[in-house]
Length: 277
Image (cartoon, rainbow, N blue to C red; front, side, top):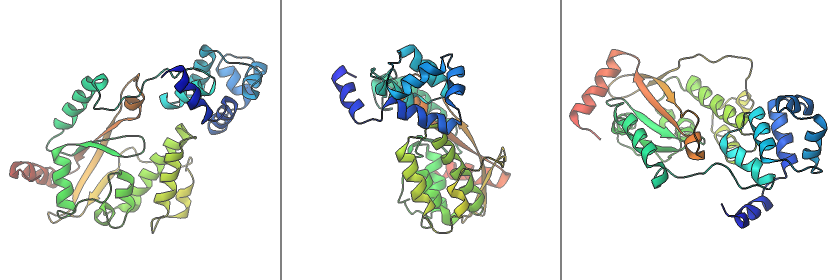
């Protein structure tokens, strides 16, 4: 990003003090707590938050580490402090991420004959393997989903929600994940708007408006679907990238579905043999 681009971006972003206070509140840290974690004096941190002192890039990095900020939010903090962002953001189709895209395609291809798909932090489905397409067509009886967003698919009564047998359990899991995304990036307006949207769907309990930090979720959730082939049961694993240096990779998740019983495994294998897609 050029200096002129960074300057224009800064004009549309909150000052660094506002961002730091938002993050401290989200992490439940006092000014003293954050100063200790970042190895700063409380006075220096106070001056940074009020705009009386300019933070160095090293200081910004230490604050971001102490707040456990995602790469996108680290870039925002750098911009707010007057610096050019450190981390690039490339789409998966750009040459810069060609090798990683090939790796992702290999992972979801080798998940056959079971579904796998790639989503971003806002639950948009970016890629899916043929098995996912086959299973989706079976569940929806050939109908196309009106959404490309996983949360909308789960919460819309006219979409996959209609075939999820244990919908309350599944939907609560996704709401919990969305709340966790917001806790990790409290300034993410897109995620907040998505939360507000899915909460307006019918049958969504009012208590889901708030993040539940008291109850530990089950480590394994079985998703149960009704279909013309009988009930299909899957459990999922999530793969993320270790120490990514690109914002896009930092926000990607690869979700792989595995059969939770022999019947589901047999149906997936039969669909693959038939070439249904």
